[in-house]
Image (cartoon, rainbow, N blue to C red):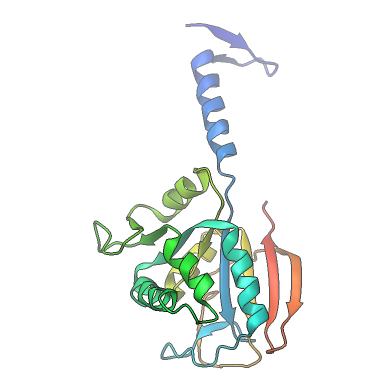
Length: 218
């Protein structure tokens, strides 16, 4: 077997070096970003204690901004508990041409979706596949694929797991002007500091404040 003398004085095979090169090339392929877009309260909740979400606010500028975010992604991921409400809701809005959110809804329906689940072997929904493997492995596979960025739409447990495993690259936090108190937060499982860089902030007339952060990588 061919040998190569390295500067450190250690002998390593060409096969070993080639294997390392393949691994480095694989790492370089993971270029798609995973974005988290979510409406939260001032105290960091995305739902009330009983999953109440009647406190959310928005306006036409917010809808326009969300539409712009959606243009930059071509994959939606979500947890199993989220999909039963997400797909029927957006399908219904997509069938209402006069609804102000029709354009977004149409994109939500058309964009391919990946549902992370441990209970299903195949998808029950159109334009949707399931991911049943290790969370980190499945996300790496998605990031390694060619295309636009990826966006996650929850729910609470799934979002929390992604944050805990440091898989999120960017946060779009739309902060609502209220405090819930005993609500459900997506940051509950994070056990260490994750430093962020502010990319953009924006105030909407309805009272929403956007905080767009990029996660600092070590």
